[in-house]
Amino acid sequence: MEDRVRQLAAGGVVRWGTNSIGMSSLTCCCLLELIIGKWSVDMNKQLKKIMSVVITILLLAACGPFEATSAPDDMPESMVTENPTAIPVVISEPTKDIPTAVPSDGLAPESFSQYIGLKYPPSPAGLSQDFSMIIQNSDVYSLSLVNDGTSKMLWLSKITGYDTNGSASWEVKDVLGLSNLEPGLTLIPDGCLLNGVPESEIFAAGRNGVIVMAWRADTSLGKFETIAIDGIRCSSDKAVEL
Image: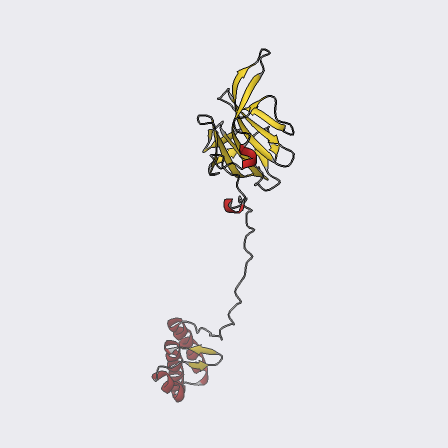
């Protein structure tokens, strides 16, 4: 008991049975032992037992129960949760990685530029039209996909007149070579929107629902123009494989 009192005076924490107790709890225990020891001289055994029980109850009620302290458990392992499944995102291929068609403002390949100024019909031998349509809101311009047997090109043609049968005569105003484009693209000749606004002069090429190239058939100048694909959305029932 004296050793415990000295350790308590030093401000330490001592073991009391299987419990670790601090200063307030140990003080109560010391008082309990001193009082019971003092009273044991003057009281008979029966009264000593009764008073010991009463004093113990009172002291425990005043001091509070002892709290057992156990050695800290090992730190639990960190829980690792799987990342949520990423939502697949369709990303168009970088434009710089896609071979671009050569704009025809004086830069059309020589093999194609020879057709600029051509009046037809009749068309030169060896040429065939895979597709042709009137550009909406122009009435006098057409967009035609022409094949020379080895490569494909787009013609921007303008009506120059009509024969006695009412058939139109055309003049090629500009040519857009497509031989530099990678295979597997689809031409979308109409039905395009630019930032939500319909643009009848814009057409595009795409793959798997993603636009990779876009152009404008400028009917005020009679020229093809390569444009950025940002903000362009197209939906057409006239799509043609290139």
